[in-house]
Image (tube, rainbow, N blue to C red):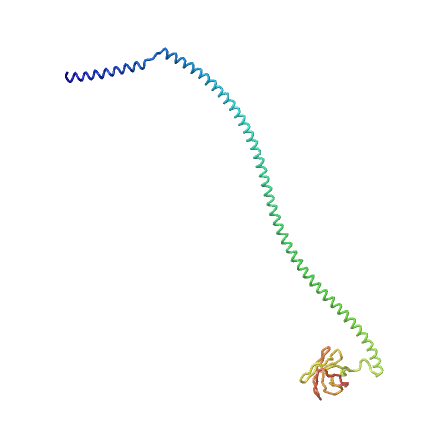
Length: 273
């Protein structure tokens, strides 16, 4: 057998194997169409039953969906009603808020006005306190002035009583002096300017050439009068009055017989110059 025969033999073997495979495949795929139709009819019936069941379920689902939609619509209506109610409540609360805000603004304005009024009243009170303090000071000064004037009035009343007593004494002395003048054939117009009154006093201070004595103008002593200084009836000196005050007098020493001391006796010299 040559090469070609071998090749053909192999090809025939391969083709035989292929045809056998095809036959086996055809046999494997061969079916009984009647059984298949019966099975398909059974499947169709099952599918129709399933379809009916599914249709019922779909209808039930539709009904449930309709109920659910109705419930949702009712819920939405309730929610819408609640929303409207809440909106109305919100508007009412907003109105209350606006009213409260207006009241707060009014209260704030009132507080500011009250604060301004308080500041004004405080300023007025301070002014009044200053005025009261000034009035009190004036009152205290007036009271002190009244007290001072009252003291002066009391002093004046005391002086008045003393002057009245002095006036009474002067009247008595004047009556006595008038009697003496008549007894000595003198009148009230007789010159007595240079006649010193007879008074007694004491030396209160001693200078080099002068002395100060405890008698003065109220006692009738005048500049130009002569006074005599003595101690225990011992003649010490003589002085001429150069300056007088109501209760004091200063004399220039004209003659000194002995040292002069404070407390020495002083009397006017009864002579006319």
